[in-house]
Length: 101
Image (cartoon, rainbow, N blue to C red; front, side):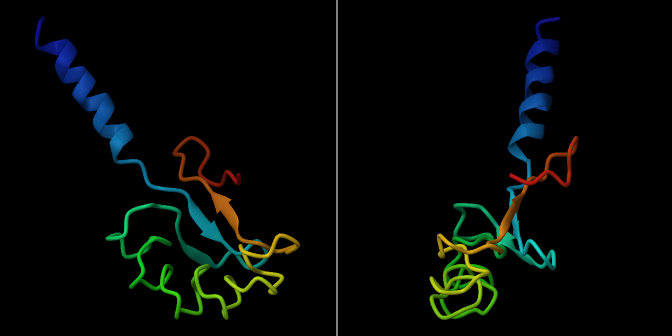
């Protein structure tokens, strides 16, 4: 009986720790724009300075000041406070997979 409770806790915690981070997507087209993760080693993270979605040189990155999704003047940009088509945050909740924040 002493081993059942710790084993159950490990199973429950491991499911939480393996949850996928939220995703950025274009509101109109649904185009994937990377994971909202602070992990600089995740190839799909917006925090990876060498990745497709985090590089300041990539056209698909919100960190590219000259790109469609990173310019402060683009209507599709996360960095434009007046944008009407800024990227949407989609959760990866298994109970509500398409939820937008």
